[in-house]
Length: 473
Image 1 (cartoon, one colour):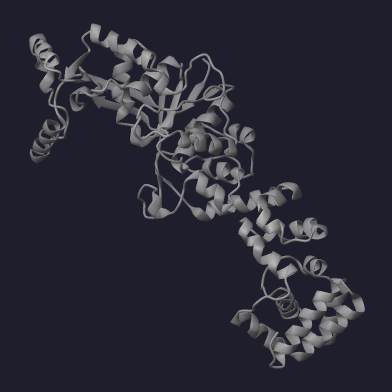
Image 2 (image 1 turned 90 degrees about the vertical axis):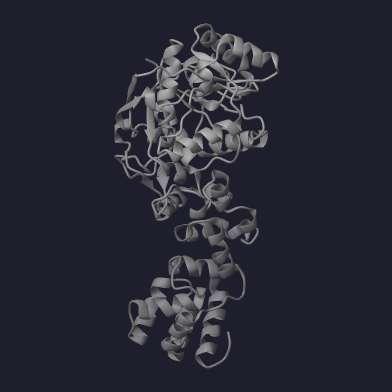
């Protein structure tokens, strides 16, 4: 059997981490099994679907390195891959269902349906369609149609049936048809709702495995009944645990901004995101930073968790740091962006990249170091000022003498200061680091001195000496 998976978003907004994880897992599973990954645009909601969201979604997926073998801009044998262009296919199946008397017209208004729902809830019953129109005679149906009423069409759910399927993630699932109301398969305006077109397209496109969020679990028995009624192949379904925030509730905007577009603009690297997501609710057997194809070889359906996947920003930042470290100088420089690039003299660009890469997570972090190395002044916080004063006048006098004698040979400078001041460890290098950069952390002193040069070093040591003597830097 050829493995065929799909990602089928609705273009009603930007894709977020939950969408992307489903897309990533589907693409990884297909790649691992030399299968086919399909992108299908579910744009039957004409009011809410927008072309710009399709464009941004395609951009986001390409940026992440998630490529499809069939779909928009990629020819395949099962198109079109836009649901708005597949109405003729849906009409064919509607006719089959109507001919077999498996669907019926429903003339109930929204007001009537809402009233019925409230009554059921008041009686402690689970709300479902009361099958009001299922008992209409053909004469009553014809009368309403003649009067100009436009019905929706509902699938006649059979009574006393058990719908069972083996979820590839959650295991055996069982539902009773008596707990499922007759559901709409065709809206009054003739368009198909998600339940219908999603299932039909999966069958038509020979989808073998559907990986989607567990919020779709209740849809699955309905879609199975529909496909079986039409004698179409039912795919293997797997329902992913939802992503939750620290408070245990489903991830949403109140937990932060999690659209791919926003994360990209923040400076996250695509390889960081796919490495984090590939382990979010999935027990990956390696902790190496891997590109997509390598990640696919470590993806297993049986290692997907049934428990909610808790989003951990610190873990995402861990992969971001690894990703930054893995960049070569050219890619690192491109990632920093023009606003940072223009601050660095051309002859210092490679040296700057090598020096600061270990100390930044996002491009804006590099602005701090660009300012420190290539602008004349920087500010000191109270903690840094305290260390400068505690080091004392003699410390900076000896530092100036050592740099005058040994130039940029930091090892010799430190050795000389250690001997003359009888200092070592943090008491030796921390005041020096703060005097030169204003920071208690950052690049190695060797890198700092190379970027600053002899003249700036002398100026900054002199400024620190003034501070010790009560002046201003």
